[in-house]
Length: 280
Image 1 (spheres, rainbow, N blue to C red):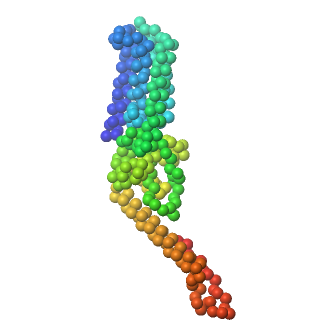
Image 2 (cartoon, rainbow, N blue to C red):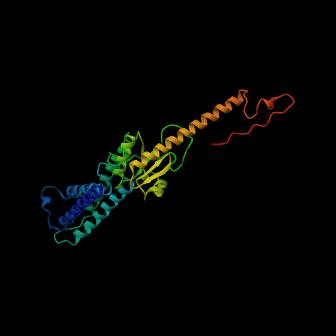
Image 3 (tube, rainbow, N blue to C red):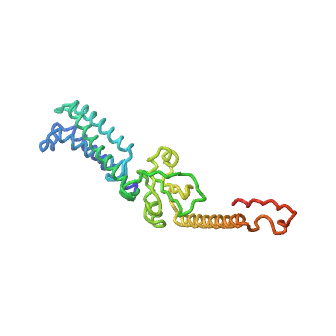
């Protein structure tokens, strides 16, 4: 479904691009009777920029990466200049530097508008990636690092990026197992940091559990439940072991027998040295 949707978006952009070339080849386009050429150029390139942003990302009103915004702006400026060159060789038409400037301004203004909208979407509390209204831009505090002694719930991170075809399905699996994004787990856009993009960009979607990579590509619900259960048992055992060691140490410090027996404490005999408890 995601691949089909992406195909439709690119088809719309391609069809619109073909329409602009057709209109540019006409001596006098029919729509020129209704609006001025300046207004026509501004509308044409604003719509083109929106369709290209929609095709590059996962929709128009989603968070767009700086790369997609830059590509759209560059394409509009270059295409506007090439369109004027094309009209120079079209009978009955003439090229104009003014029109090329209008094309560029319309494109850059549209990109700037959606960059501001994208920034606002990224700051929305609880905004989530695939299927949501925006990708979160927060970075994991220590992606790839494990803190086995930490207490509390598991830290589950869902690494994704714009244009990820498998991310929507993986997100549904995580939400069904852990609850809404931002509460049961954290959504991280790998493009928000170069090191994340370099490490995980070709593997998204990626799921980290307590900093350890557990899934890439598809997320299996049964395996996810098993991993979380095993991690819970391990953490419970570590906490119990830590509590037991703390109790024994406290007993020794309070003057109880720890490391030597009453026999070792008899007068005239030095106490036996304490043996350290084995590390767990």
